[in-house]
Length: 83
Image 1: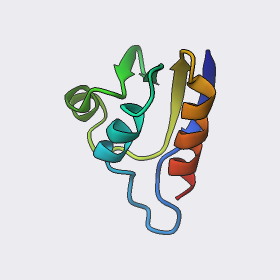
Image 2: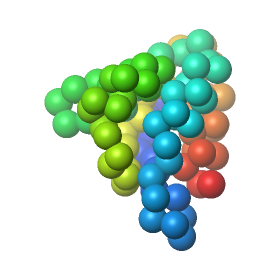
Image 3: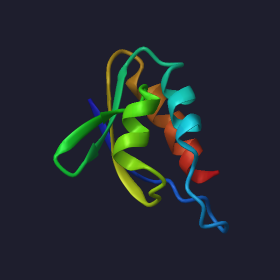
């Protein structure tokens, strides 16, 4: 399992990365991808769950990647966070 703290506020704009971008990216990987939010784990592949739990929050999130392609997924989400 790979755990990474990532910041999802777009540099310079102050706007958060849209949830749809996170969900679409997550669904290209076979591994489990979730965000640890307070006491709950939020499945990044589930748009409704992300919307309900995170809303339009920006800031850092503890991302968890677990599966055969977890390292590739972590790299992709790092790229998204840096855009």
